[in-house]
Image (cartoon, rainbow, N blue to C red):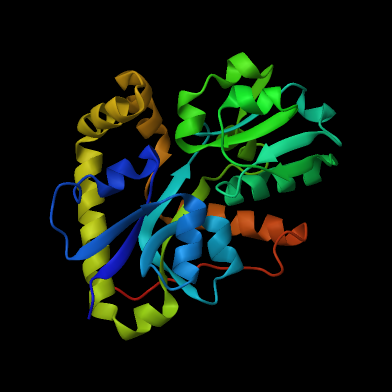
Length: 276
Protein backbone atom coordinates (compact mmCIF):
# COMPACT_ATOMS: atom_id res chain seq x y z
CA UNK A 1 0.00 0.00 0.00
CA UNK A 2 1.00 3.65 -0.35
CA UNK A 3 2.53 5.46 2.60
CA UNK A 4 0.16 6.54 5.35
CA UNK A 5 -0.73 10.23 5.00
CA UNK A 6 -0.33 12.17 8.25
CA UNK A 7 -1.52 15.75 8.68
CA UNK A 8 0.34 18.54 10.44
CA UNK A 9 -1.08 21.94 11.43
CA UNK A 10 1.04 24.63 9.81
CA UNK A 11 1.32 26.66 13.03
CA UNK A 12 4.11 26.48 15.57
CA UNK A 13 1.67 25.09 18.14
CA UNK A 14 2.37 21.51 17.00
CA UNK A 15 6.15 21.87 16.71
CA UNK A 16 6.91 19.85 19.87
CA UNK A 17 4.85 16.89 18.63
CA UNK A 18 6.70 16.77 15.29
CA UNK A 19 10.14 17.72 16.63
CA UNK A 20 11.45 14.16 16.54
CA UNK A 21 10.02 13.59 13.06
CA UNK A 22 11.45 16.77 11.52
CA UNK A 23 14.59 16.01 9.56
CA UNK A 24 14.06 12.25 9.80
CA UNK A 25 12.73 9.79 7.26
CA UNK A 26 9.49 8.47 8.77
CA UNK A 27 7.59 5.63 7.06
CA UNK A 28 4.70 7.98 6.29
CA UNK A 29 4.08 11.22 4.41
CA UNK A 30 3.58 14.41 6.43
CA UNK A 31 1.08 16.83 4.88
CA UNK A 32 0.97 20.39 6.30
CA UNK A 33 -2.14 22.54 6.20
CA UNK A 34 -4.36 24.95 8.07
CA UNK A 35 -6.73 23.46 10.67
CA UNK A 36 -9.73 23.79 8.35
CA UNK A 37 -7.81 22.21 5.46
CA UNK A 38 -6.78 19.23 7.57
CA UNK A 39 -10.35 18.82 8.84
CA UNK A 40 -11.59 18.66 5.25
CA UNK A 41 -8.82 16.38 4.00
CA UNK A 42 -9.46 13.78 6.69
CA UNK A 43 -13.18 13.74 5.98
CA UNK A 44 -12.55 13.56 2.22
CA UNK A 45 -10.22 10.58 2.65
CA UNK A 46 -7.12 12.55 1.62
CA UNK A 47 -5.44 12.03 5.01
CA UNK A 48 -5.37 8.93 7.19
CA UNK A 49 -4.14 10.36 10.51
CA UNK A 50 -4.25 14.03 11.47
CA UNK A 51 -4.88 16.62 14.13
CA UNK A 52 -8.36 18.10 13.72
CA UNK A 53 -10.30 20.66 15.69
CA UNK A 54 -12.09 19.07 18.62
CA UNK A 55 -15.42 20.33 17.27
CA UNK A 56 -14.69 18.73 13.88
CA UNK A 57 -14.30 15.43 15.71
CA UNK A 58 -17.55 16.00 17.59
CA UNK A 59 -19.45 16.72 14.38
CA UNK A 60 -18.07 13.63 12.61
CA UNK A 61 -17.37 11.21 15.47
CA UNK A 62 -19.14 8.43 13.58
CA UNK A 63 -16.36 8.52 10.96
CA UNK A 64 -13.31 9.15 13.15
CA UNK A 65 -11.50 7.56 16.09
CA UNK A 66 -9.18 9.38 18.48
CA UNK A 67 -5.46 8.70 18.87
CA UNK A 68 -4.79 8.03 22.58
CA UNK A 69 -2.59 10.41 24.53
CA UNK A 70 -2.37 13.33 22.07
CA UNK A 71 -4.11 16.70 22.04
CA UNK A 72 -3.49 20.43 21.90
CA UNK A 73 -4.78 21.69 25.22
CA UNK A 74 -4.31 24.37 27.84
CA UNK A 75 -5.31 25.03 31.42
CA UNK A 76 -5.82 28.76 31.52
CA UNK A 77 -3.90 31.16 29.30
CA UNK A 78 -2.93 29.90 25.82
CA UNK A 79 -1.60 33.05 24.02
CA UNK A 80 -2.49 31.88 20.51
CA UNK A 81 -6.31 32.07 20.69
CA UNK A 82 -7.50 35.60 21.40
CA UNK A 83 -10.67 37.65 21.26
CA UNK A 84 -9.84 41.28 20.45
CA UNK A 85 -12.50 43.98 20.67
CA UNK A 86 -13.16 47.70 20.70
CA UNK A 87 -15.95 47.12 23.26
CA UNK A 88 -16.23 45.36 26.63
CA UNK A 89 -17.62 41.82 26.54
CA UNK A 90 -21.00 42.84 27.94
CA UNK A 91 -21.45 45.39 25.13
CA UNK A 92 -20.99 42.98 22.21
CA UNK A 93 -24.69 42.25 21.71
CA UNK A 94 -25.38 42.78 17.99
CA UNK A 95 -21.73 43.68 17.28
CA UNK A 96 -19.74 41.98 14.50
CA UNK A 97 -17.04 39.47 15.46
CA UNK A 98 -14.73 38.41 12.64
CA UNK A 99 -13.96 34.69 12.59
CA UNK A 100 -12.22 32.51 10.02
CA UNK A 101 -12.89 28.95 8.94
CA UNK A 102 -9.61 28.06 10.67
CA UNK A 103 -11.10 28.70 14.12
CA UNK A 104 -14.03 26.25 14.39
CA UNK A 105 -13.42 25.13 17.97
CA UNK A 106 -12.72 28.64 19.27
CA UNK A 107 -15.69 30.08 17.35
CA UNK A 108 -18.00 27.45 18.86
CA UNK A 109 -16.60 28.26 22.28
CA UNK A 110 -17.44 31.95 21.81
CA UNK A 111 -20.98 31.08 20.72
CA UNK A 112 -21.31 28.99 23.87
CA UNK A 113 -19.74 31.66 26.08
CA UNK A 114 -21.96 34.48 24.85
CA UNK A 115 -25.05 32.27 24.86
CA UNK A 116 -24.50 31.58 28.54
CA UNK A 117 -24.07 35.32 29.15
CA UNK A 118 -27.27 36.19 27.24
CA UNK A 119 -25.30 38.14 24.62
CA UNK A 120 -25.83 37.68 20.87
CA UNK A 121 -22.97 38.99 18.71
CA UNK A 122 -23.00 38.66 14.94
CA UNK A 123 -20.31 36.20 13.82
CA UNK A 124 -18.99 37.09 10.37
CA UNK A 125 -16.69 34.67 8.55
CA UNK A 126 -13.74 36.28 6.81
CA UNK A 127 -10.25 35.33 5.66
CA UNK A 128 -7.39 35.42 8.14
CA UNK A 129 -5.62 38.78 7.88
CA UNK A 130 -3.58 41.24 9.96
CA UNK A 131 -5.29 42.86 12.92
CA UNK A 132 -5.06 46.40 11.50
CA UNK A 133 -6.91 45.33 8.36
CA UNK A 134 -9.74 43.86 10.43
CA UNK A 135 -9.98 47.03 12.51
CA UNK A 136 -9.91 49.22 9.38
CA UNK A 137 -12.72 47.13 7.84
CA UNK A 138 -15.00 48.09 10.70
CA UNK A 139 -15.07 44.89 12.72
CA UNK A 140 -15.78 45.68 16.35
CA UNK A 141 -14.15 42.39 17.39
CA UNK A 142 -12.06 39.59 15.94
CA UNK A 143 -11.13 36.05 16.90
CA UNK A 144 -7.42 35.46 16.31
CA UNK A 145 -5.79 32.05 16.33
CA UNK A 146 -2.44 30.46 15.63
CA UNK A 147 0.65 32.29 14.47
CA UNK A 148 -1.28 35.50 13.66
CA UNK A 149 -2.41 35.69 17.28
CA UNK A 150 1.21 35.43 18.41
CA UNK A 151 2.81 37.82 15.93
CA UNK A 152 0.28 40.64 15.47
CA UNK A 153 -0.10 43.65 17.78
CA UNK A 154 -3.71 43.02 18.76
CA UNK A 155 -3.48 45.33 21.78
CA UNK A 156 -2.43 48.13 19.44
CA UNK A 157 -5.41 47.66 17.10
CA UNK A 158 -8.18 46.89 19.60
CA UNK A 159 -8.96 48.33 23.03
CA UNK A 160 -9.54 44.98 24.73
CA UNK A 161 -7.90 41.58 24.28
CA UNK A 162 -8.97 38.41 26.09
CA UNK A 163 -7.30 35.02 26.07
CA UNK A 164 -9.83 32.32 25.14
CA UNK A 165 -8.09 29.79 27.38
CA UNK A 166 -8.75 32.05 30.35
CA UNK A 167 -12.34 32.70 29.24
CA UNK A 168 -13.01 28.94 29.32
CA UNK A 169 -12.01 28.88 32.98
CA UNK A 170 -15.07 31.02 33.73
CA UNK A 171 -17.23 28.11 32.57
CA UNK A 172 -15.26 25.09 33.81
CA UNK A 173 -12.07 24.60 35.81
CA UNK A 174 -10.85 21.94 33.39
CA UNK A 175 -8.37 21.86 30.51
CA UNK A 176 -9.61 23.20 27.20
CA UNK A 177 -8.89 20.89 24.27
CA UNK A 178 -8.51 22.72 20.97
CA UNK A 179 -7.47 19.77 18.82
CA UNK A 180 -7.31 15.98 18.79
CA UNK A 181 -5.32 13.60 16.63
CA UNK A 182 -7.70 11.27 14.83
CA UNK A 183 -7.72 8.36 12.39
CA UNK A 184 -10.37 7.70 9.79
CA UNK A 185 -12.39 4.85 11.28
CA UNK A 186 -12.40 2.87 8.03
CA UNK A 187 -8.62 3.16 7.75
CA UNK A 188 -8.07 2.20 11.40
CA UNK A 189 -10.16 -0.95 10.99
CA UNK A 190 -8.25 -2.08 7.90
CA UNK A 191 -4.71 -1.05 8.84
CA UNK A 192 -4.31 -1.37 12.61
CA UNK A 193 -0.60 -2.19 12.29
CA UNK A 194 0.08 0.94 10.22
CA UNK A 195 -1.88 3.08 12.65
CA UNK A 196 0.09 1.69 15.59
CA UNK A 197 3.35 2.48 13.79
CA UNK A 198 2.32 6.10 13.15
CA UNK A 199 1.08 6.55 16.72
CA UNK A 200 4.38 5.22 18.10
CA UNK A 201 6.29 7.68 15.92
CA UNK A 202 4.11 10.58 17.08
CA UNK A 203 4.50 9.72 20.75
CA UNK A 204 8.25 9.19 20.44
CA UNK A 205 8.52 12.48 18.57
CA UNK A 206 6.47 14.28 21.22
CA UNK A 207 8.66 12.90 23.99
CA UNK A 208 11.74 14.20 22.20
CA UNK A 209 10.10 17.58 21.63
CA UNK A 210 9.10 17.93 25.27
CA UNK A 211 12.62 17.00 26.38
CA UNK A 212 14.15 19.57 24.00
CA UNK A 213 11.73 22.46 24.41
CA UNK A 214 14.51 25.04 24.20
CA UNK A 215 15.50 23.78 20.74
CA UNK A 216 11.85 23.83 19.68
CA UNK A 217 11.45 27.38 21.01
CA UNK A 218 14.60 28.56 19.23
CA UNK A 219 13.41 27.16 15.91
CA UNK A 220 9.91 28.60 16.30
CA UNK A 221 11.27 32.00 17.33
CA UNK A 222 13.39 32.09 14.18
CA UNK A 223 10.44 31.01 12.02
CA UNK A 224 8.09 33.74 13.28
CA UNK A 225 10.61 36.43 14.21
CA UNK A 226 9.57 36.31 17.87
CA UNK A 227 11.74 36.60 20.98
CA UNK A 228 12.77 33.16 22.16
CA UNK A 229 11.33 33.92 25.61
CA UNK A 230 7.91 34.39 24.03
CA UNK A 231 8.11 30.93 22.48
CA UNK A 232 9.41 29.37 25.68
CA UNK A 233 6.47 30.86 27.57
CA UNK A 234 4.05 29.74 24.87
CA UNK A 235 5.12 26.11 25.00
CA UNK A 236 5.03 26.14 28.80
CA UNK A 237 1.30 26.91 28.58
CA UNK A 238 0.41 24.16 26.11
CA UNK A 239 -0.23 20.52 26.88
CA UNK A 240 0.00 17.78 24.27
CA UNK A 241 -1.40 15.06 26.52
CA UNK A 242 -4.83 13.51 26.49
CA UNK A 243 -5.24 12.18 29.99
CA UNK A 244 -8.31 11.89 32.15
CA UNK A 245 -8.53 15.63 32.88
CA UNK A 246 -8.32 16.55 29.18
CA UNK A 247 -10.93 13.91 28.31
CA UNK A 248 -13.23 15.29 31.01
CA UNK A 249 -12.59 18.81 29.73
CA UNK A 250 -13.39 18.11 26.09
CA UNK A 251 -16.45 16.00 26.88
CA UNK A 252 -17.73 18.72 29.22
CA UNK A 253 -17.26 21.21 26.38
CA UNK A 254 -19.21 18.93 24.03
CA UNK A 255 -22.01 18.59 26.61
CA UNK A 256 -22.23 22.38 26.94
CA UNK A 257 -22.36 22.78 23.15
CA UNK A 258 -25.15 20.20 22.99
CA UNK A 259 -27.11 21.92 25.77
CA UNK A 260 -27.06 25.15 23.73
CA UNK A 261 -28.01 23.47 20.46
CA UNK A 262 -24.59 24.00 18.86
CA UNK A 263 -24.02 20.24 18.58
CA UNK A 264 -26.89 17.93 17.57
CA UNK A 265 -26.14 15.30 20.22
CA UNK A 266 -23.92 14.26 23.09
CA UNK A 267 -20.45 13.05 22.11
CA UNK A 268 -17.92 10.86 23.90
CA UNK A 269 -14.41 10.13 22.68
CA UNK A 270 -13.95 6.82 20.89
CA UNK A 271 -10.32 5.70 20.68
CA UNK A 272 -8.51 3.72 18.03
CA UNK A 273 -6.98 0.41 19.00
CA UNK A 274 -3.24 0.72 18.72
CA UNK A 275 -0.05 -0.38 20.44
CA UNK A 276 2.49 2.34 21.23
